Length: 276
Length: 255
Image 1 (tube, each protein chain N blue to C red):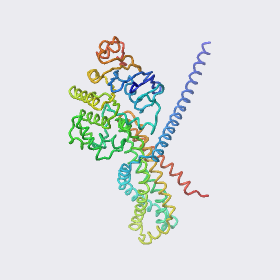
Image 2: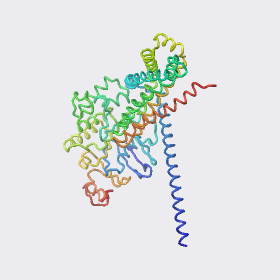
Image 3: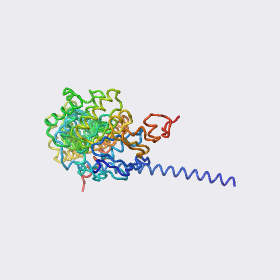
């Protein structure tokens, strides 16, 4: 009798443990689904707001300066060094097969198709998604977003739309510049330390690169711009609880934008360069 | 005469926490009503429900006799133009200079030209006792009392029909608090607006109101004209207006 009761208790504990484990998984999945639902609703609202007046031209212009123009140094420098490192690696790798001369072709291919948009995307995500989330998050916790509503102004139209439009317009320009600077980085390393002749390097680059190499990178750039501004705004809008909440929003904006950029990059590569 | 604002059985929950549990409140045109109550009793949530920043779970909100409870998006725009609000911490836009804060509703909401809106803003700033030199400062350069005044100027800039005051005197010294009280009274009278304030400052409540309503545990437990509050006979009201720790209201303090 005594033993049976003890066995029953142990069994009860085991079931309880199992239930707790399942409940934890369930909670995590529910949280994830709720987050996806909220983000989808927010995205739909943002896109719908882009299509209806009023459109704040002055604010869009201001954001183009902040998102695009002020990102130029960061994007330019990273693109330059990436192009340089790429040239070195391709030279060393190609050396194993006696194919060192392929450097200009692979550099331009790698930069325009992948590294230009991805590196610019990640750098801008770090700079801009963080700034947007911190700014809008602070506005949220200090009731400035509620104040917009009471002043007959739609906060999504006033805050989100200009940032979205500016990021979608700025990113392709930034990436075009990153492409040029990246190729230039490869050119400098190749001509200065790998013994390439400048004119031949440039001719090989221009002859090899196709319009699709460049345009696919620019399409990616526009998508990345959308992701960066959207997640910055989304996390800012949903931040709560003072300084710490704004800090969390900023971190989440950068991390989620970076992950989504890399995931979207794979998806876009597989669509744009479908092998069928 | 239809009431300016009418709340009927308004309920609002956050998760499992019931904040408003059936609020009934009628606010007559051009009157000044103050809702008193302790922190966390749902005063701010009541105002946010009327403003449409929050949507009630149940109940009805009428403005000028029109049901606005579930009015959304652009259908709400004409309604929002009737409102002005002074936020507790000012909620001034720190990216804009003072005059643009005051003119914001005129430029964005009402589509007024910037130059004209600026003149109106400077005129409204004068009404709250601020000179035109303040107009070009950034809100972060102002003291708390000045920020409240700018917030007040912004709230009345578009001549709203209904003005909400969220703790207008909180965080100010007693003299500045009285200055703000006077400004609240004079601005409401000048604009001919209906005022709804929330506060736990009894001095301010007595001074700026015609009527007082007390919110406790998500319900209006007492309301009457300001003169009647001292003979309410309601132990909750008695405890609150005299600020006693002992009484029927138990604070959630862990001893």
